[in-house]
Image 1 (tube, rainbow, N blue to C red):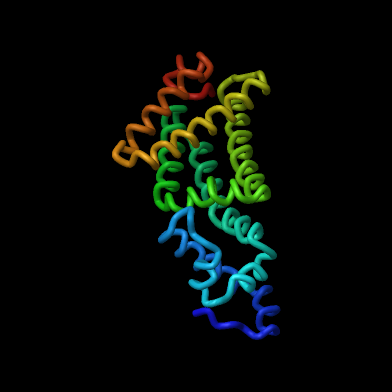
Image 2 (tube, rainbow, N blue to C red):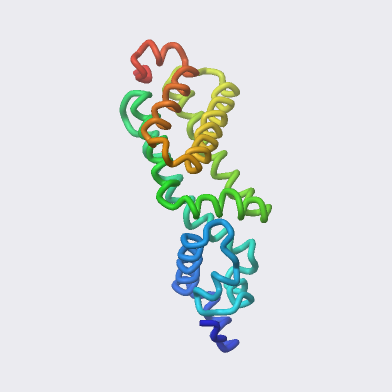
Length: 211
């Protein structure tokens, strides 16, 4: 721990994807232990290198933040989008999507808080990356609303999409601070609230998008 790599090895290792992945895994372990307050020095020590060498692998601290965001948000996006695009009633799809999202963030709340609050607050590029992820989810939801629920007004669809995603994200933040509340209670409450805003045609159809 704390040993210094030779300059030539440093230059080679910065281009080594396996080494880069190992450093991100070290960062994951430290964040899991220490939460949003995890320091760059602790991450470097976990990886057995100095902080300047850690930064060299990612360009700077911002690069490390962005690499962590990319590493963990890609899977969240894929899973959430797949759940909402699945077949079934509106209620089933919304409920399953929300449940999946809450399950993912509760699996590692320390990492979620690090990325959404610490890294996003400290680094404009990471904040932009996380905002882009949220906008992407909102736009996907808006497209589904326009394509399957009979909502013809694009502006309203995008307003609803952003409002729903923002509401779920904020409620998820609250729930992580109130773990005594069952996840099912949060999922049902959000699902009921979202369904109030869906087009009347979808609600009359028992929560199923028109064919």
